[in-house]
Image 1 (spheres, rainbow, N blue to C red):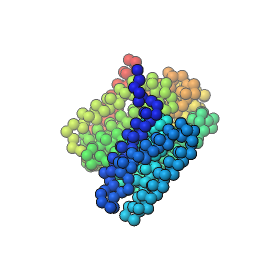
Image 2 (image 1 turned 90 degrees about the vertical axis):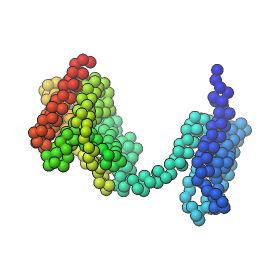
Image 3 (image 1 turned 90 degrees about the horizontal axis):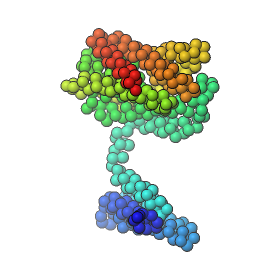
Image 4 (image 1 turned 45 degrees about the horizontal axis):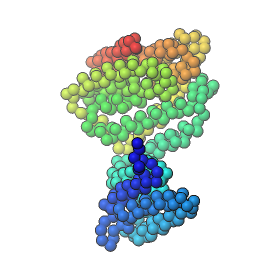
Length: 417
């Protein structure tokens, strides 16, 4: 048996009342006291929310949609009067806009109480977070980060949805929209890593820095950390932990790429990726024990997004797709595996994205899996050589052993599947 307030006008009115009280309670704490106080508080916002609910209910009952406009005009006039009264000492429009939003939420509550209640809670949360949002926008967020955030939003909301979907012959069968979404994913990971390092860099070590940088390029991360270890800028164990943490990011990002392009192939390789990432993180934890945290905070004026690197990954993916497609046509399945190994030397993610695209286009799952392994083997070998060359014998030996242990664990997990 359902409760009497589970639906219907009573539920809408109750939701509107709750929204008015919630938003009004937040505004009441900020409106001040005395003759200079703000015009609207808990009672005003509750009445505005109930006015919206009554206008919606009466307009439906009496078939008079003009009541909605009348109620909106009344609330708008009150908001204008409140702003005119307080503009000299407080030029902000937050309270006045909140009154109009509360009226509209009251309307929404009568037709969709759950949505109305959620919108009211979100509005109250937004109003209550004023100080934190102001601090974040003016003190934490830099000009570069604001620019990069707007660029990221434009790519996600405008550029990617407008691109054509489906295989494109001139790209060797690759899906242009999925390719753009992959570039967007890489940029998003860069942004997350940058913000995390800005917030926690002084209290974390090279392990977190290496893990976040590994989403961009594990090879470049290992070479950079190895050079710092060779020159004595960071402790050896901390440097090794950072290098192996970047390899854990490679496993995670590989699954994200394959999951976006070829979900069936990603599902087949998931146990192997989990095993490889688990071994990498276990080695990182072991190496990090007893190590003092190291400074890893990027400069405040550094860019959050590295668009050229993401575009370079997209170019490598297209090149690898064309290479593997041509190898498959000319040399058959062995050509695809050999091409994947060759592409993996430059970038494992590009090779996997290309194999995922070919798998969606009809490449046999067994051949795709062998291609992934070929790319991982060649890329791991290059990373081991880079660790040895940049960081010396002690640094490179342990990193190489760690990479080999990850591959062995991944192979065992895939065999036992």
